[in-house]
Image 1 (cartoon, rainbow, N blue to C red):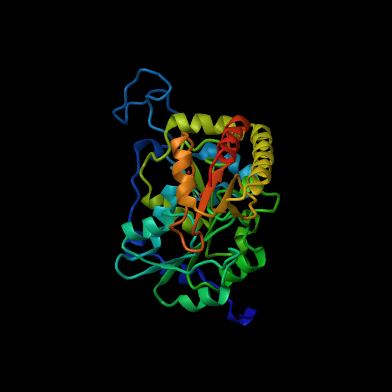
Image 2 (cartoon, rainbow, N blue to C red):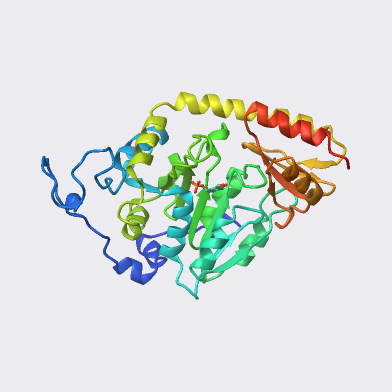
Length: 355
Ligand SMILES: Cc1ncc(COP(=O)(O)O)c(C=O)c1O
């Protein structure tokens, strides 16, 4: 593909990608978000007046969190949407752009499973184009798979479960040529030194970037993800969101974590060194066939008989993720780097495995 094949999106063309009923929809509005100004007496929402830190409904747009993220990621807060984990955003993006029974999404297996789940729930066709054996993107094959029904292309970089970063030039080429919305899932961005695509958002009107507090920030249980996109796309996500999708306890925890990124960086550094230690130790085992290079907090490991190893580890009380059902991941287990003692336990168990 040459630059002449690149799409110069107009606002109207982006608008035409949206499901018509979503364009017409009016978001839920609470009295408190309609009211601008200071109020000392809140009798508008049928809440309990007894203050326990969570008796009031949360502010709907998570503005305080968006301000912190805007600062951390060097982007305008109006270009950020906060979701109940990036899982929620995967579903919302599918819902905004795919007309049930008509439109299609594209993804590159082996990859994160929710893209396919969201497509099935929303009755969108799922078109998977398998990554090459080194888990790079088969660009020509992917381009040959899209047509008028194509609405979303999911790119996951670094990719789960393969652990590799996609080539930024290829990602850029795909964003510029895909005839719909490209979602770049940067869930593992905090583990890599390379720059996120967020600072380049304004170059790409059809791009949505997702990130999460579940990985590097260590808050998977709190459920908080972010989408970065044009104000037009962010407003569509706001239109269809549940009124209070982020609860006050999560917000408080997220504000505390985001205000102290040093702790996140220290823990990420430890997990990276643990991943390297695991890689070294597993590489010495004769029933380990191959360890795929990873830039994340996990390793994809091909065993001579993954089912046997998987069951053996379960028997020892160690759970890893079986990825054998995914294309190009036959006999593969995905192993997350844990605490040093947990990794020691895994290594000791595997050393005792009788092939
Ligand atoms: C690539 C990728 N995206 C998104 C998610 C989900 O993130 P969240 O916890 O924010 O829903 C995961 C979780 O494993 C993931 O691997």
